[in-house]
Structure formats: structure tokens, C-alpha cells
Picture 1 (tube, rainbow, N blue to C red):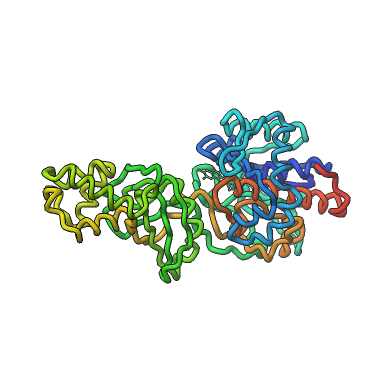
Picture 2 (cartoon, rainbow, N blue to C red; picture 1 turned 180 degrees about the horizontal axis):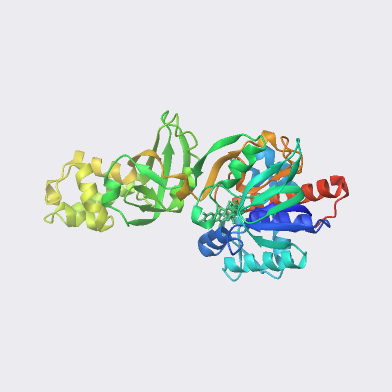
Length: 421
Ligand SMILES: Cc1cc2nc3c(=O)[nH]c(=O)nc-3n(C[C@H](O)[C@H](O)[C@H](O)COP(=O)(O)OP(=O)(O)OC[C@H]3O[C@@H](n4cnc5c(N)ncnc54)[C@H](O)[C@@H]3O)c2cc1C
């Protein structure tokens, strides 16, 4: 019989298995896919933004959901230790803009290979199976039942992830498994997710990527909940791209609130400067039509949309454009408004918000307060963070805490007497 069974071989599960094995526990990691870390492989566009090189207080500021719950785990296994761990496995790391840490090779596969090697060296048994049930005795946990086998053990760590990008294997199995042991599941929803627009003009610009646009996200009380500059993409349903994904993590009340994205298409120019530029462009092209002038200002796909929204006919001569029309165009360039109907489905989100209620989990050991011997880690929990390596850091830290906690439980150790690694 194993001391610890880890269910799920993503970031949290691999780190949990390692941490448990390094405490001397006999550990088996059960992953449904043939390969470990399928989601890890696609992180950071295949480069894996493995953590963020910041302090724990800075980290906590980037976690909008249940950051207090994470304080202990993040403090005990902070970014500097995550970096040290991967470097000790031979992965050279580099830090980019916004303290984002990547492997120097720009290859997420190097992170997965390092984990695999460390798991093998630590003596973790790797098995392919899909866990479908927890076997529960009289208020005790007897093991995990897979499609192929039963895995008796003293402790089970659930690290099955959320429901985002389900083709990677994260299909939400852990919710039902945890619920069978008495846990509450906060309904999963997407964060870091594309947004569906009310207006159809976004669809007319689908494929258009704006590299440097400034946005403000306003709620129904006109309060700005997010403001940032970056890259945005128009799609057939609305808006996507890095800037929008980041913005979506701040739009947390779609049930009760309405959001509008206000875009400044010319963030480098003040209103006065843009006004002067428009005047000059219209004067220099007095006898050409509006469409021609607009093509000098914005990408071609945007021209018919801005012409329609400003109410200025595309074929109107520049010298016939009135002051009022010019003003309307200026307002559009500095504040194109897109009302948001809601997020795209959670399956398309980078992370799953919602999950196992954290008040039912011990923040030091990730032990279930509902079922002795059960531990939970990673995105399965009701935690999520902004972009920048924070979500993986949560997975490493909660995995590490769960691994140590489960080993201590299985081996009958006090947590304080654990070996540091
Ligand atoms: C496209 C994309 C890019 C991202 N980029 C970054 C980034 O650069 N930096 C960052 O910090 N975060 C990033 N994230 C988020 C990050 O990948 C996740 O937060 C993190 O991987 C969660 O780790 P996890 O181990 O909790 O879950 P997962 O990585 O989802 O792992 C869960 C594992 O459990 C397995 N499993 C599920 N059910 C069962 C079962 N019943 N039996 C056995 N195994 C099972 C799954 O197959 C999977 O391997 C990205 C996410 C996506 C989708």
C-alpha cells in the first residue's frame, strides 16, 4: 500500500508528489494522460511563465480570489524557492518584463522534463489511469479507484485542476471526487478569458490585432475597475488578446454587474494633439474623401466601422467635414466603447475561478477539513490570479504544502519536523 496517492500530474500534482516523496513517503502519481503536464506544455505560449520573481506581499496583490488562504503556502514555498528548485534541476531561468520568469531555452518542455527527472530520482511511481472515485470507509479514506485499478493508500492528494482547456485532461473530475468527501464546490467560471461583445462591429474587424491600445474597463456605476495598455484582438464574438484576458480577471461580477471596455486607439496622443493632427490631415487632404484620411489614421479593417459609428459618410470630401463630425471622430478614437455581454465559456479560459471552498481546507497543509487523509492542491481550489506566472506559483506552492502535509499525515510526523527542500 502506498503512503500517498497523488491524482493529477499537472504542476500542482508533480510538486505535491515530489514534496511527499522527499519526506520519505511511498508515493504514486496517477495521471489520466499518457504524458504528464499537458497543460504545462502550452503555458506561456509554449515558453512556460513558470513564476513571477516578486515578494510574497507583491504576489498576494495579484491574487484577487482568496489570497489570505494562500499566504501560508506561498510563504513556505515562495517564488525564489521555485526558481531555486528548477535551477537545481538544471533549468536555467531568465526574468523578463513584469518579473515574469521563463526557462532560458523558451521551452516549456524543459520544465516538464525537469519535473519528470526529479520525480524519478525521488522514487515516485508514475501510473496512467483516470481516478473515478474515492473509496471511503467509516469516516476514513481507504484509497482512490481508477478505471483500471484500486489504489489503497493512507493519504490522497487531489490535484486534478479546473475545467479550462479540457483537452489537456482538466475536465473537472476533482470537483465530484471532493464533493463525494463532503466538500462544497463554488461553481467554476472562467478568468483570463476572452469577452463577448454586445455590438457586432467587433466581428466586422475580426482578425485585427492592435498592438498598442489603452483600455479602461468601467462597471455599471462607471467606476474604472481596470486600466492598462497593450495588445488587443478583435474576434468573431468580440474581444481577445493579452490585454483583454488580463482585464477579464478584474470583471468578477458578471451575474450582477455590466462592463464596458473603453478603448483609446491613440494612447500616444493627447486629445489636443490628436485634434491638431485631424485638422492637419483634413487640410492636407481637403479634396480627398474621408475614407482616405481615415486610412492614414487607423488600420484598414477599422475604417468602415469608424465611418459608420461617427456618422461621417466614407466618400464625404475632407473639406466638407464639420467641426461637430470631427469632434465625434476624435471621441471615437480616444474612447471607442464596447459593451460586454459576458465572458466566453470557462473551457476557453486560461484559468478556472471557483472550485473547492477554501474554508474547508487547512491553509498550512492543504488537508481537507471534511475527510481525514484527503488533501487538495492547485487550480481545483477556489483561487485564481492575474497573468504573470502567478497561477503556476499557486500550483507549485499549494502542491508543495499538500505533499508535505500528506506525507506527514501518512508517516505520522508532525509538520514542524519535516525536512526542508
Ligand atoms: C493556454 C494556457 C496558458 C497558461 N499560461 C500560464 C503561464 O504562462 N503561467 C502561469 O502561471 N499560468 C499559466 N496558465 C495557468 C496554469 O497553467 C494553471 O493554473 C496550472 O497549470 C494549474 O495547475 P494544476 O496542476 O492545478 O492543474 P492542471 O495543470 O490542469 O493539471 C491537472 C492534471 O490532472 C489530470 N487529471 C484530471 N482529472 C484526472 C483524473 N480523474 N485522474 C487522473 N488525472 C486527472 C489532468 O490530466 C491534468 O494533467 C496557463 C493556462 C492555459 C490554459
